[in-house]
Length: 205
Image 1 (tube, rainbow, N blue to C red):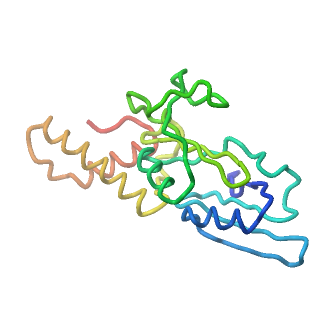
Image 2: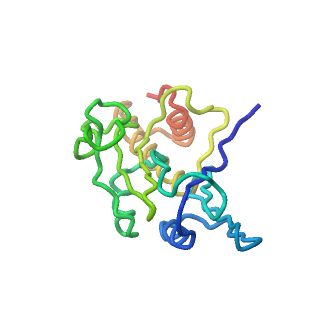
Image 3: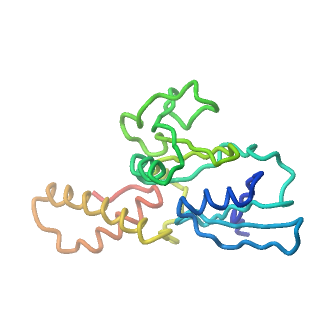
C-alpha cells in the first residue's frame, strides 16, 4: 500500500500574514476556506512539491512557531539563497555541518559555505516564517541508491526537468571526450543518465 505524505500542518498566529509570506515566495495558493468565523484553512504548495502546507484558524493545537526542521530540497543551494533573499525571506548564509553529514539542531556546528566537495545532501540554508516556524533547504543533485524507483521516474516541474537536462548535457560532453567521437545515440544516453541520476543508481560511462 502506497503511503504518500500529502500535507504538513504549520501553526501560525496570523493567517493573513502567513498567507502573504508563503505566496510571496511563489508557493501556489490551493485553498482559503473559512466556513465560519472560528475556522479557516489555507493550503499552499511549494513549487515542484508533491506535499502541501496547511495553516489557519483551529487547524492545530500546536503553538505558533513550534514547527522546526521542515525541509525543502533544491538542486542549487546558491540560487535558492539568492531567490529567497530577493523575495524577502531573509535566509541564513549557506552552510554545511561540521560532522560532514546532514546537520545538527541549532547553529553551533554550522560551517560557513556549501560542502567543499559539493556532495549531494550536504549543503543547507535556513529561513523562518513570520511566526518563527523553521525551514531548511538542502541541496540534492544525485540521489542515494534506492531512494527512488527508476521504473517510475518523474520530474516535479519543467524547471526540475530542465536542470536534469543541463546536468546530462554536461556529463554527455565528458562522455564524448572519453570516447573521442560524436555519440549519435545521445537521446538514449541522456535518458539513461537522467533516470539513473534521479534514482541514485550507477551512471552510464
